[in-house]
Length: 545
Image (cartoon, rainbow, N blue to C red; front, side):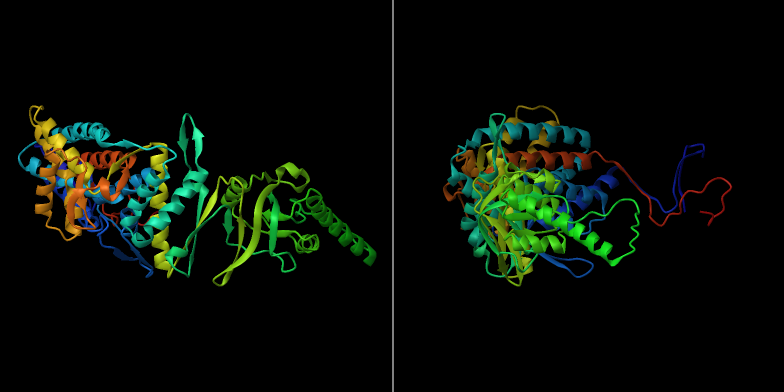
């Protein structure tokens, strides 16, 4: 039945579609807040180095085992609109800074939970949202007080930051070794720009293969292609290779229009075939003359071309992805050429070694030992597909946090220490405010403390004892005091080398506050049932679509 809203005289004003549901005022807010809190509760237990993993099974039975906040929320099927907004906060944080997705969702959930108490005391949601906005701005300015600058040549600090992001993942045992590889990868691809540094981590190709153990993962100064050499007669290894990158097919292209050739004698067939053969031979001769010893082609390579390339001792690989071609250009210094006729010696790239290697049951081509590669490959190994997938997610986070510190060279200690520090400072600042905003700022401070509380709970500590102790230490001026989740104590987090980029912390506070405020300002939810019939045109009977 349609939902009709009328004036006191009974005149209809709003007619909602059949099957629609509407919730208003406090009911709508409570519903939204509860949905968002549920999402935060699911995620909270996976926070920190002692956090638990989630097993997610999709509709076709594929399993994902992870404790990466963004991955969990991407995989679960969220129906409630407010809960979907919590999924968006994780996605936004993941794409912007790569880490801190779990923290952002936990803080957003805590902000809404604290706001609920204020709404019950008849404080208007808009006043709460304004208070939260001011508190977030102030918190970010306070963050600068505990941030420390890092020098671009300080690889050790970069490694500590990378290690911190991986300590919460499955790779915690191998985190120190993997952190070294991650830092080497990002430093090799970073570029100086506008007085600072930029690192585009899409230039780090992450290739994964089951087999071996996580510690067998390695960095290749070049590119690994999951392709094999096209012809068995070609060399499988070329040293000091000169590499031609060709984006056009090495075959005779078919004409776009239809053409017929009338042949009356067998000799004409022979000469026609010889002509075609000659064109293909010249193509190979051109490649050979300029000194190329390796041909990497984006499209197909004709069998006859393969034969002549093999005779000339040239190694060739075909059907390479476009994204890999651009990485190959960055790694080897070659220029991608669209036509063999345009190929010159200047267009060739270089690599110490191009070799087909067997990895498990597949043959892959390694282009390695590039002089100054601006694109590299991180080869991830692991005992099973689930392990390899989770290692890849950990590597992505680690690459992102190192990139964050390179682009904005400041870091803060982790372990809930910054959140506890900000909460202490915000409580003092709240005293200078008048009116109801003061209450909102105090609640914001409490919400930030949900991070150290979750860390303490997940590491088996008593959360109430832990937060009381932490508040006491912070109030006494120990600004680096936080939850040492590995040892289960409250201690100086900087001393245990748990460091996080300031960029991540700022993004977490911004996105959590914006999401909470957006949900708070909703006071009316109109949901149209999917089963409702489409609107009909005047005079149209049902079924006349």
